Length: 200
Image 1 (tube, helix red, strand yellow):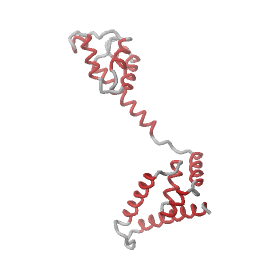
Image 2 (cartoon, one colour; image 1 turned 180 degrees about the horizontal axis):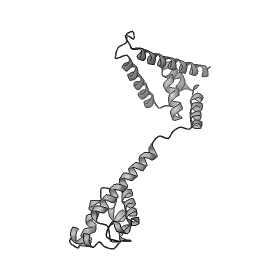
Image 3 (spheres, helix red, strand yellow; image 1 turned 90 degrees about the horizontal axis):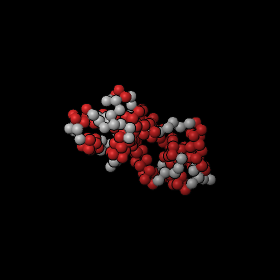
Image 4 (tube, helix red, strand yellow; image 1 turned 30 degrees about the horizontal axis):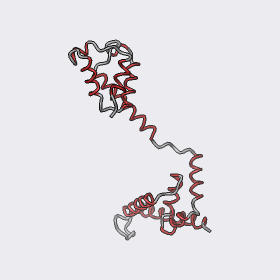
């Protein structure tokens, strides 16, 4: 748990004077009790949020609260909440998948093609997941782990079963379902042939 005094209260006390009107209203004029109340009120926030909130309050215009006196407790909580929300938003943007540039895409295909003659590629061709192998190498720039292979194959089986509506007879399938199934088969066959050609 982050320390409210180290991350928030002490930086503000170095800049602000002790609170005036808020003291008498909230804690009966006891500065010790006031700062302890602030610490409890913001204790659930992260240290990063506390530090950013303190920095924002220090830089805030003077007319937002009692001149340069220590901010009221509700203002401290609000600032920490806003800081934590903004930090989460920034992290979400930073962790979002980046668009692949044409150059990077070319590199990924190059890597995938370089793996066609490997033992794992040969196994993929033999076991019927050649397309999965090539696509994984292209997207991730590495060969898949066993757990990733199992997950991808299970996902494809679910998709095929969904297209077949749980049955094995394809005669009653819709035109769209038949088209998708045929496309999957052609893709697998083409991928298998690429691997077999590279293994010669």
